[in-house]
Amino acid sequence: MSLEMSNSSETSFLRRVLVVFGLVILALVLYQLSDVVLLVFGSVLIAVLMRAIARPLQAETSMSERVSLVTAIVGIISFLVLISYLFGTQITDQLSSLSTTLPDAARHISRDIPIAKLFAESSAGALMANALSFGTSIFGAAAAVVLMLVGGIYLALRPKFYKRGFVMLFPKGRQPLIESTMDDAGAALRVWLGSQFLAMIIVGVMTAIGLALVGVASPLALGVIAGGLEFVPIVGPVLAAIPALLIASSQDWQTAAWTLLVFVIVQQTESNILMPLLVGRAAGVAPAVGLFAVVAVGVLFGPLGLLLGYPVAIVADVAIRKLYVREALGEKVDIPGADESN
Figure 1 (cartoon, rainbow, N blue to C red):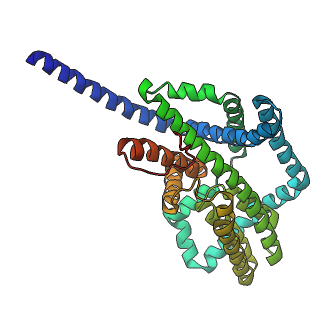
Figure 2: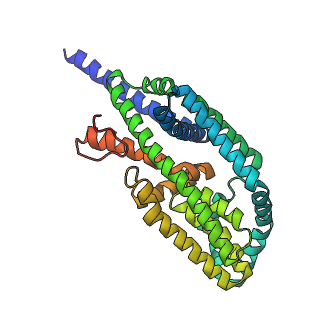
Figure 3: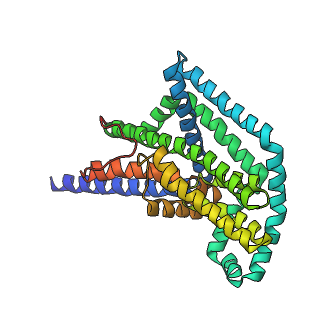
C-alpha cells in the first residue's frame, strides 16, 4: 500500500513538473512568435469590428448573417476609398512635407532648449522615437495591414468555428467557462472599438480644424496623425501632440502655445464628454492600468504592441475578473461586456 501511494505521489509530482515545463516552453514560443500573435489579435479586432457593423444591418433588414457581413466589409472599403478620393492628395502632400520639416524642427528645438536635447537622448525619448517610427517601413506596415484584414475577414465569416477550435484546447469541464469568457471579452471589445473609432474621427477633425485656425502648417496631416493615434488611449494623444508642437515651435512660440491649447481642449472634450457619452464605463480599464499596459506591451513587443496594448488590456481585464477573481476567489465583481445570465 505504501509503495503504491509513493508511486502515485511520484507520478502526480512528475505530471505537475511536466505541465509547468510545458507552460514555460509555450510561453517562450509565444514570445518568439510575438509578432504573429499580435497580428492574430489584430485580425480578431478587425473581425469584431466587422461583425459589430454587420449586426445592426442584419437586425434591421432581412439580410442573412453572411450577406450583412459582406455588406459591412464593402461599406468600410467604400468609405476608405471615398476619403482617399476627397482628401488623399492633400493628406499625402502634407505628410510628405511633414517628413522633411519634422527633423529640422526637432533640431531647432533641441538647439534652443537644452532640456529637449536631454529628453531626446534619454530612454523615454528613445521610446517615443520608436513609437513614432511605426510605419516608416511602408512595405512592412502595408503587409501587416493586409494580413490583419485578410485574417479578420476569415475570422468574421466563421467565428464559431475558430472559437470552438480554441475552446477545445481546454479540459472539457472548463470549456463552457472559457467560451463565456471569450464572449464577454468580445462584447467588451465591440463596445470599446465602436466608441474608439467614432472618437478617432471626431478627434481627427477637431484637431485639424483647430490647428488650421491657429495657423500651424500641414493641419490636415496632423489631424490624421492625431485621429490615428487616438486608437492608443492615454499614450496616443501625447505622441500625436509631439509633431504638431515641433512644427508650431519652428514657426513661433505664440503658435506653439495656441497649438498646445488646441490639444488640451480636444483631449479634455474627448475624455470628459465624448468617451463617457459613447461608451460610459462598459469597457473601461482603470487609467493607470491602461497606461502601464500600453507602455509594457509596447516595450516588450515594439510599435505593434504599443498599438494593440489597450485592447490586450481589455481582454486581460475581463479574463482576470471572470476566471480568477470570480471563479477562483469567489468574489463578486462586475465584468465589462458580460451577459448577467452567464
